[in-house]
Length: 234
Image (cartoon, rainbow, N blue to C red; front, side, top):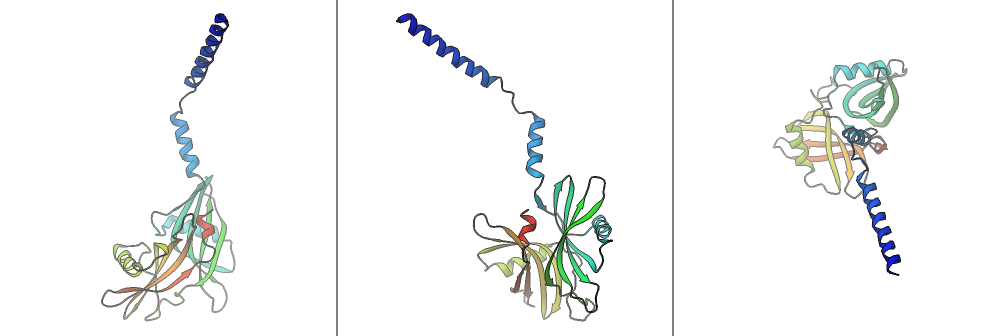
């Protein structure tokens, strides 16, 4: 009986040792594997542009891509995001005007795909059918595009003051699209809008703000860009 018990104990020890050996000989992840994991996490996701300014390079890409598209004119307004794929996807907010008498100018996001050889094509146009106020920028007292779409410290301060009492939705300004001189100033911001609850999708909205001559600021209108959550959510 003692011999059988000793034999069983010896087998248990051998199995345990074998288990330890099998764990210890598994190779630790290499630096290359860590890098691949990081790349896998990045590829496929959209990220907000560091700056909304339309560079000469981005303007050339857009012109090259829409050159064969007939029936509309495209004016780039703000660069809003990119996506790393086998190449790069670019998202550009544009003003689109159909080539017809008295056209209605609207805001749209144009998605460009730039391959690894520098070729570029339009893969999607998300026309929100939300009219701009910039039909005639030369009209005295009318709306006009600011010198830069960047959110400067002054533009951020006006935005923060106007949205201070607002709750329920988190708005992040990403570009200043329009200005208008009145008895004070009117502003139009392109914003990321996210309802404050877990798992909520981000969409885009135009937030209009009036700042009076004393520096007080208030929201005058918020226009959601319909189905825009399908862009950054992809």
